[in-house]
Length: 263
Image 1 (cartoon, one colour):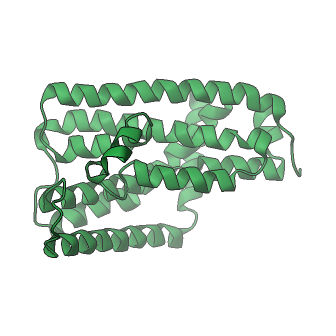
Image 2 (cartoon, helix red, strand yellow):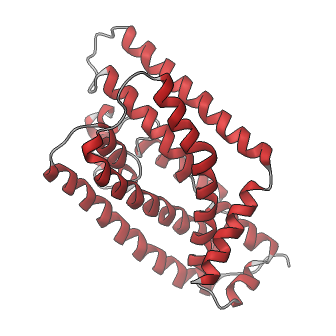
């Protein structure tokens, strides 16, 4: 257990090594949040003839909370694994007496701690002060916390599966860009899934993306009964198990196909 804590500390030190990147990350999220607020406010003020699936207040709560939690849930596992393979350092990582996937997760946790303290928390405080509206359903916060943790694990496993594909694809950035576009659109991090057209809602019901953002954000921002909350958590647990299984399969196949580059 100590060795994984050491890698968490390494992840923290790597993230705080460049102070300017921390400030840049925070300011980019502030600008993005303000742009989202202005965009959706303008859309509702236009009084479009087509009625929207969500109210203005509900939509603004959604995009604000989605932006806040995205500030610490972003995962760099794909880029890190690719770098290890291209430099040949993957050979050293694999012979160490430590589980490689757990190592990647520990470094990700360390980076997330820094993102939470330097970006998520200040952004949440700023949003609470600037946007004069209730952002969360206080009575659902325990369920929301559980949902966010499940979402965090799902997003990591999703990134890990794509990252491990580099074991035999060598270069995964085209796949990363493609799957990243699907993930950003279908997870609800950009647009609330409730506003999707019917065919996209149907398709999305069979994909893991909404378990990453749409489910935790709606539990945080929208009042719902216990049965609905448990159903949403069950969906997240289902996709967590599926992606965990895919990780095992990808690892088993990928380590047999791995060709070490560089070194």
